[in-house]
Length: 207
Image (tube, rainbow, N blue to C red; front, top):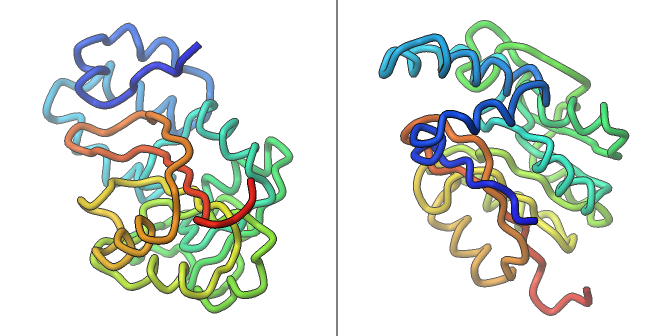
């Protein structure tokens, strides 16, 4: 059975889909609560605080199930570590890094959910045996590109928008030049966002 489409237009047209999302994780429960109890467009006022507490992308059971198939995982730019936290709850072998710990003045993350090691993309040279997980790499930043330059593994799992507000042109160009898209999954979207989960395999590598 194919997974349901959870883009924001589909969710708003079919509010009964929110019932299927309850109970998967705390962030998703908050996402559902906001959409059920706060009128449009004021519900979007809740997004910044939830993003900084949890993650820039909303995880789902289906997304975590897909990630598990590509374990072990290394995450760079983990922020609060919420996706890593959920992976670890499921027994997924994952190491997470970020250059900055969450704090009250951190635009990207203000709450820490699990261990996130200090580290920059250069540490990925040590983890070619792991799939690389990138969740909303910063817009117009070299971070995503630097990850691809340093890491020599097989699969990249990317959660974010494609050529819109995550990563850089250089990152997307390098991905499309060196990797093949092998899987794509719809995840719950905040209104106006176009993020999804995609899996890419390095071109020329054996399956």
